[in-house]
Image 1 (cartoon, rainbow, N blue to C red):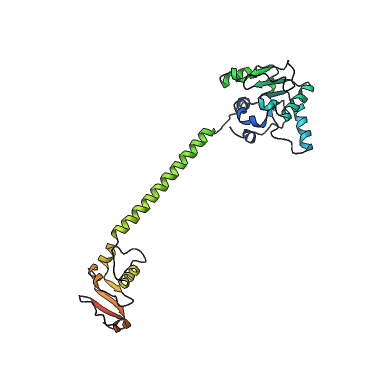
Image 2: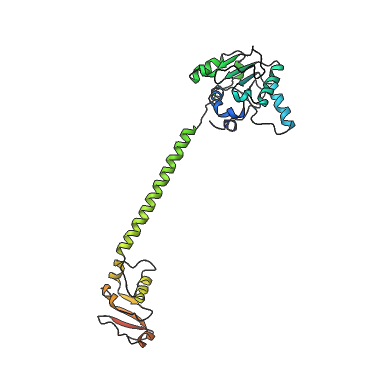
Length: 274
């Protein structure tokens, strides 16, 4: 688990606890070990990152000296980290019991300034977490007083979290695709049913009758009245309106020379009589 320090803050009580000394760069690789300890109810205190000020430095030093056991994650990063080295040396000088955990089996006690009598456990020699747990809990200096009530550790691994994100993203893409496909299908159907009107005056009247929407076959087949705003340039489009029985025209439209259409229409003048 990445950022387990945030999910599981350091123990701040007064019961026996162990001090876990590690380099910040080892936080992610430490999680299997921390999970073992937390699941057994082990009280763990640690100090991630540099101290903010002198007061926090003094607080950390007090918590380090108060530990019942110092567990040192002796990685190459820890051996090169002056903060880790100074803290574990201070604990050694204070006579606290120390236990080194080497992730790769290399003995770095000398490079960290620790004495040869400090016990070392090679993590790589223990293939399973259960095996490592047994060796750790039986190690020299590890007291059962460090353990409280067992805890259930729930976590979402990076791989499962990534898988969940990918599944959700796939569902989102699929839903968006279906939505766009359905919208495109509706648009294609609307275009397929749309009637081509040549005269702009008649087209404007039909669009008004359609409420601003497309002029479809259903509209023109069922339209019985047509309200024109001017005299059309041509009446040929009326052949597409089989149910048309009434045409409304403004009176001033009759001032032109264009003839009215022939057919079984009632021509109504807006504001006048037929």
